[in-house]
Image (tube, rainbow, N blue to C red):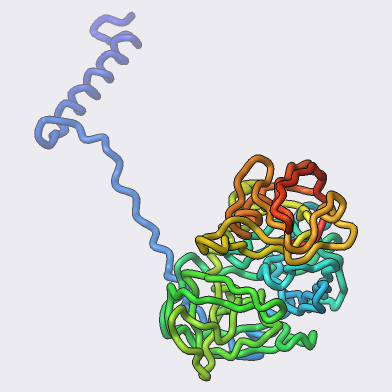
Length: 371
C-alpha cells in the first residue's frame, strides 16, 4: 500500500457511503416511501351491436330444421302434432319436447325430422298430463340440430311471435304470426280426440292462428328463439264464452324445461310419470252414491280385451273402491295411483260388483300407451 493512498476495500466503503448519503437526500412525501404500483388501466370492451330481427324467411329456415312432426296411432284414430329437438341424448339419441295430448294413448308413435325428412321411432321418457308436456327420445337422431331457447323471462306483452308446426297434420311445417296479448293466463283445454278437458295455468296468450297439428311446436320470438310450446288454439277461459278471434296459448319454455329436468333426473311425483306406462286395462268414471250423491269409487265403463283387469273378472259396472290398500273415491284417485307404478308391478284390487258384493283380486300390470 502506498502512503497517503486508499486500499481497494476502502474505496468500496467510500462508494457505498456516498451512495447512502445520496439516497438519504431523496425527499419522502409525508415521511414514507410509497411502493404502491400505479392503478391498472381498465379495459372497456365495446358493447355488442344490437341484434337484428330475422326476416320471415330467415326465421323459418332457422327454426324448421329443429322440429319434428309427430304421428300417434291410438285406439280412437290418429293424432298429429309437432315436437322440438332439445339436444342430443347420449351418443346416438335426441331428446324431443312436445305436448302430452299429442302422444296420449299412442300405441305407435313416430317422428319425421324437418331437417332431413328421416322418420324415427319414438320412446316416451316421461310426461305430466296436468301440465300437458311430454319428453321423448329418438334413437339414432343425435345429429338433428337443436332449437335455441330464449333467455328466462324474456317474453313481454306486445312482443311479435311466430308459431311453427305441423298445421292440420299435413306433414308440412307452416307459420302463424301474431303478438303476445297476455301473460300468466289460465284456460281449460279440450282434447279433440276424446273430448277430455285439462286446466292449464301461467300460459302465454297470442293472437296467432294456431291450428290442430301445431300442438307441441315452438312459439318463437323475432330472433328465432323458443319462448313457448304451442298447446291450445281458441281455448276457453273458465267462465267465459269462446271467442271467434284468433286466440292461442303456449306453455312458457321455462315451465317446460322444468319438467324436462324433473324427468331426466328421475324425480317422479303425483303428476310426473317416468318410463313405460302401466296398463290396468279399464276405463273408469266417477261413481256417485245414489242416496248421498257423493263420489264413492271409480266405476268401470270399459274393460280392455285380454288386459289385467279382464283376467281377474272385472266387468263394466263394477266399482273399484281400493287400490293397493289405498281407498279410491274417484276416477282421478285411481289415475294418480297409476302414475307412480310401472309395467310388471303387482297390485291388489277391491271392488263392488253389480249385485253389491265386495270382491278382491291381485294382478300384475302390463305395459300400455302413455296416459
